[in-house]
Image 1: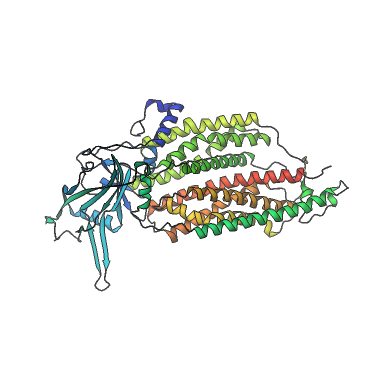
Image 2: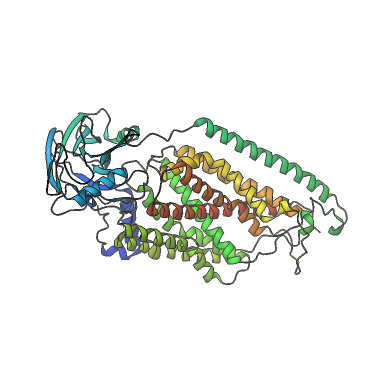
Length: 608
């Protein structure tokens, strides 16, 4: 089964070939059986600062033991996107054979190399190895700060590692590394006299050793992900606070009930009042807060910037489909902790395959509202998110490339992703657009529209766009604020998120709150005789993305220890894209909710 990216097969030039490659890369993975004495390959992967999860470098960029010729492992698309760069190591591990303090190599470190190691240890560099798809993590060295007067600053390098590996039958279940009862080699300022190691001529001689111990485990291979979830090299800071989640659910239910009950009572009174009017002259009606019937000849007047509006609706529908698909796949157990970057691969595959949704929704509605430039509409739809994504990725990837980080994508991966969009994503957008254009009917409006628009009266301050955006964005954000912290701790931290059932509930609540708030704000807008609801419905709930970006700034400053140009650029760049995704998705949901609501209330009136 091929899923490497070092060289592309010829079949990838065709759409079906690319489909096969992406799907194989996404769902590859099977149990490997070993016999006693078989070689179990240990791959070295990456190193990086503990507080900057996305700032990673190849393990062999440090002055460590390495083979004369480095052989890299063929990686999947998701692994490359995750910054993995696995290479074979000098560690020789045999299945179920213990090893005690076996020499790995002896290094003569120059003063520059010692300073490089000291700097890495002071920045809390950790390393990641991979054994049978199990990540093994540990710190490069040891740092100790003690005393005030005099101040003591000690930096030490771990030159011995103990590998503890659990097995069941012929399968590896779990592995970790420890430095218990191991004394670090001190790295003093300016290589002078160092106890316990050879020093001479401005160089430092260190000998790296390792031990391997095997332990039998009762867990079968099919359940080994549970063992990895129970163990964490990093501090356990992610504890699900059920009380906070339940409190959020109760508040959301009360909010939705309040909006629905109040709105239905008001509408009931409006229907009773308007439908008993025996005179057909709408100008005699009360033009106060309940004057939404007066604008029945303007409420379905098509908005400006039709193509952009339809593109927003189409891409929003695409991300709604994509997010639902990702959550359902997670609930089905397709993303276990041993599949490196599986969610990244799934997101790329689904984004390409769901492009037909954006093209269909956008072009279908564009045709309904009498749009004429449908080709331009398809191009705008396909580039509405892909263009900001490419621009952001270009900046972030350039900075990673400049710093030498493994997060910089190789050229073959860039070509593969570009091929997925050119050969799959864009054609499906065009196909969806053509199908939507041909199947689009006429716009279903219960009322006729006048040729001349009615003058809109002056609106009070609380009905202005900014106020509606503040209300419509804050309430959905408050519904997901608790879960948002856990998601940030997973994406920008080192936690494993496994509560996908709760995530599905919160996602459904987010969409429900957005729809209800949009309907309520649209009603208040129409009651003030303002018929410009089209864009207002998109912006009101779509502003949730702004609140999410503000929260990301708060998280960066107060909930994380991230720093540096590399990590900060990636964090804020992709946080902006995340805010854009939420704005498009919620804007689309709120628009369709408002449109359904407006059609309902005007269809329920007795019009002359």
